[in-house]
Length: 77
Image (cartoon, rainbow, N blue to C red; front, top):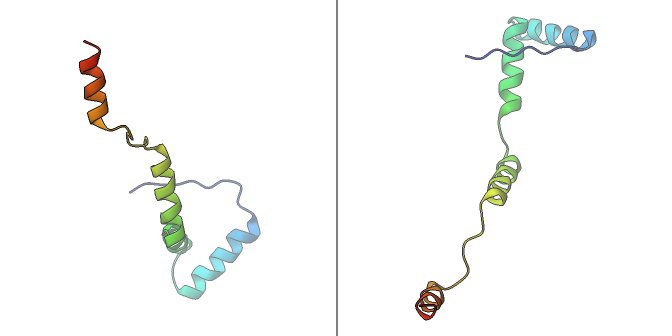
């Protein structure tokens, strides 16, 4: 499993997370795991945006008919 260090968190944020952890009956570390796990899930619009980015990196398919290419090649000889 990986580790992440988050620097420069506001003290109020840390205090709030500690209070939430206490309410939920677990440690600050477990509360942070739960928050990050929940925040990391992709909703359908996130998935669509990711698919669009991948699609934009994919070259467009050839629109030239291969018959024309073969004919031009033969004619050039």
